[in-house]
Image (cartoon, rainbow, N blue to C red; front, top):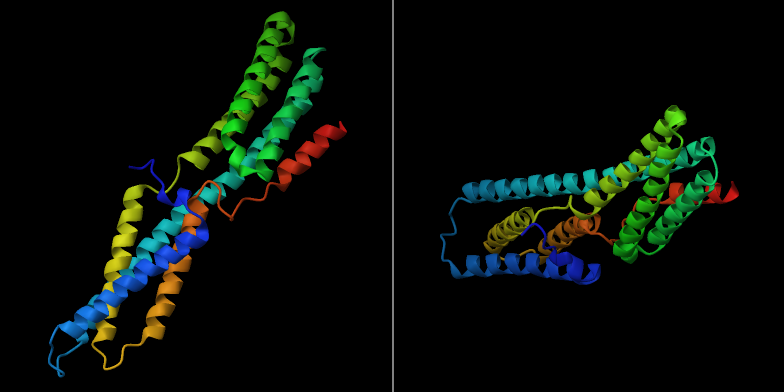
Length: 260
């Protein structure tokens, strides 16, 4: 259930309209239920107000909790991207310390390694292709490093520095892939969020429906506000949303490598 993400299969505008429609429907059902249920005009609304307030407070908590998950994932993507940029550049610089032709070969592979990341930043839909190409380049780099360590055992200190930066570079890709593809909001949290949203707006609709004239402007405003917050969470959690990290450090790295 954690691997299914319904929102990946529809555009954001349609997702937003669907969410707002669900919220408005829940409120409308609450208003109709209040109209159908016969109550005394003098009935105290105090307990009902408390219940509605508790529901909205719970909804605010779940929204804040879910938003925190997505922002942590977003921040993690930025951090790992910068760490990968640093590791790649360090590996490139340390390649100067080893003999030819291994030095030139590793540098060429690193340039290609960064180039496909630049392409991915321009077109996020290439993620599967880029992961496959990155793995192939990593294998080629590791073959060169392994052969170098065997042939030039006397340069153990220099080889160790290169191997360290190469391993760090590989590890950072694994971290980026994991946080990008796996560390997403579980389906059970989405289910809980929408259940609370529906019940909360039903309670709001029921409370407003007890008035002589329901305030639909307030209901629509609440629906749009909750829908906008949920849409931001969905966009941050998605793999190809409009809110993306700034890839300028990767572009700058690629230019620096081309200039050397």
